[in-house]
Image (cartoon, rainbow, N blue to C red; front, side, top):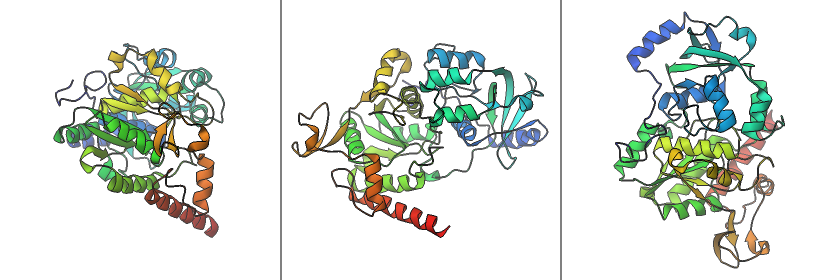
Length: 394
């Protein structure tokens, strides 16, 4: 328990790596005289997460000891659970002149300094080994593996001091862990359940969220709005869906909508643990883990993201997972149910594949109300129509 009465952050305290305004100006001027290293959208997302304390207890990009421990053991070198390497990669030519112990300015695509890295270590690593251990595959068709193989062959580890945050899209919902905790505290919440999503919320998601709400004080609906696959529904469209759903179907005093600016890795089970740790830093005591959490394609078993939690010391992990099986509307039960609660066979279940739903939406057809709320469907149909018109006008 932390001073705010909520679950303690991972490692015991929020580690904020964003400098204050007075120091930012001084360091920005210094950064212009330092070696410059361009960083991409994923690294910028990682810098924001490091800046606000969402990656606590990390103080920067991983040095070899932490990297190797995370890849092999799913723990930091100090024994704390952590499952996704947070690294800064570059090519050997850019790395060669950089000296350990020196400072490097990390710049965005415009050449503007975003952070200063104190380079503690530069080291080579085995991409295929990381792919096999973290993603459970070395198939380049996997989006996480593809991103890994495309990055540089040298990792730069060390503490970062972030000078500025990137453009704050969805600023009204972009709560830092400190701000989210303050909101929970103001509402008198102590037991808070976090929900991760990169998709619109359909009836099945709504059902498991409301089941969880029965046993906690509040729900933190926390969609990821960082880098996702090209064929994922754009964050702006998803946000409209969340807003209309909360307006009509959720108790306003028991739900907070916030956004997570992290990049999606699609690492399945490992990412389920990672997402839980992040929500712990935001103040969530519980975390919903559904079917194929953070999965993609057929790389992971349906409930692998449930099973992986058994591999961790529950006290060290800290946050309580809430596991939910496949959920659906059952005509015979006349309500939402899951494989845990429904005795009827699949002929009674309203289940649509993602492909089928997209086909219906493109055709302007409303999916069954048992599958999705009509307000959500209308937003998605309109978004599909706009995208088709844009494509036709090019």
